[in-house]
Length: 219
Ligand code: URA
Image 1 (cartoon, rainbow, N blue to C red):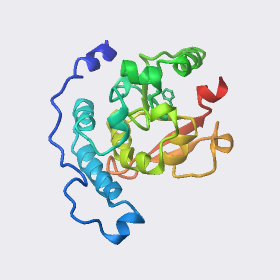
Image 2 (cartoon, rainbow, N blue to C red):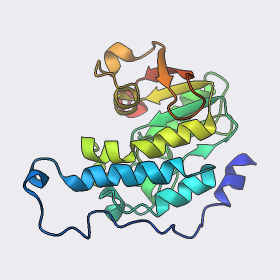
Image 3 (tube, helix red, strand yellow):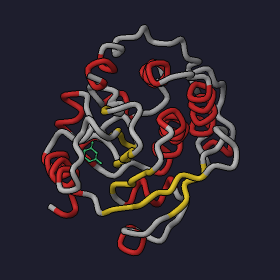
Image 4 (cartoon, rainbow, N blue to C red):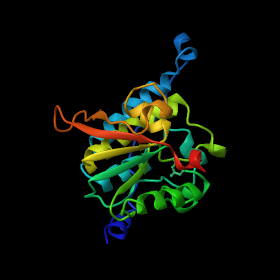
């Protein structure tokens, strides 16, 4: 099936990635105001993500990306799962403990509720594609910082481009506000349609996107 077929591709050799920020000489004054490493990490992520021609290549690129501090404490790079041909793609926040342990998104208690939500509209995990904004678990399940989120943004944007779903579901406020660049908050945004602009893909295409409450919040 599509899930295990994709899982077979999961042991790629890590890409050679430029070490970010490790070669700097004396830090410049403005480093203390806006960490330069963040910008370099974002550029590195952008280059890696845009060069990934398919999902396996994108996963390999993320496995080789060492600039995100979350990766040091995480056990697994948690990539999306499900049907790569799916018309519906769900984007959560970040892996929790169970997700980090098993290397799969939404497999803990939140995931079980998400499964029931999908079942209530006659869908299951094989029919959709499920992923997160961030592939690495923030320690103690804290919220990802803006720096962590923005340096990982190129990876989720590319994942969306490669799946090219007809509908996006943003599960919770983090993916909704970040990917729609809309600070309104999940309570005001949920249940409404927004346009997610696909950058760098087919030009001028927006994907209809609906934010929903996160199952962890519902629980
Ligand atoms: N919460 C998320 O946002 N994603 C997961 O994968 C698990 C819990």
